[in-house]
Image 1 (cartoon, helix red, strand yellow):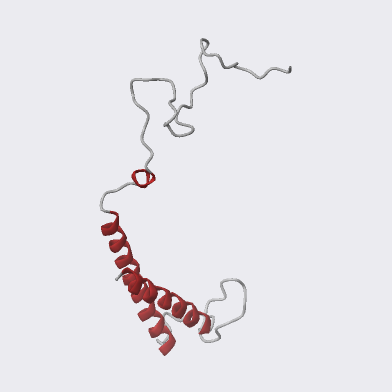
Image 2 (cartoon, rainbow, N blue to C red; image 1 turned 120 degrees about the vertical axis):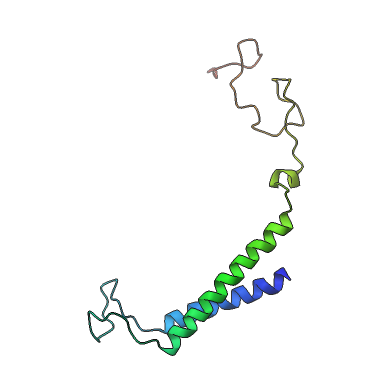
Length: 122
């Protein structure tokens, strides 16, 4: 089901891009020429391309929402970290263990550790 909705979504996106590119510019927002007509017209007449744009946009929004709902149902409360299989370090120990993920202990070494605090120039 998700693949069907995704294919429809992609077709709507491609169609929406094509229809928008076919329309003539009426604004001149980038300083380009365009639209003659009245400069202060309140609302232009709805053309066939304008109506098709609205239909494709509404379909695009509906498929976007349905894909979001399908993805939320598929997730069903799992986390990305749960899927990786990384377990968190035990709370009672301060030293990193062999099975803890890299970067889980971000504190610098203490004075009693064997690791040097600064690199030497030996």
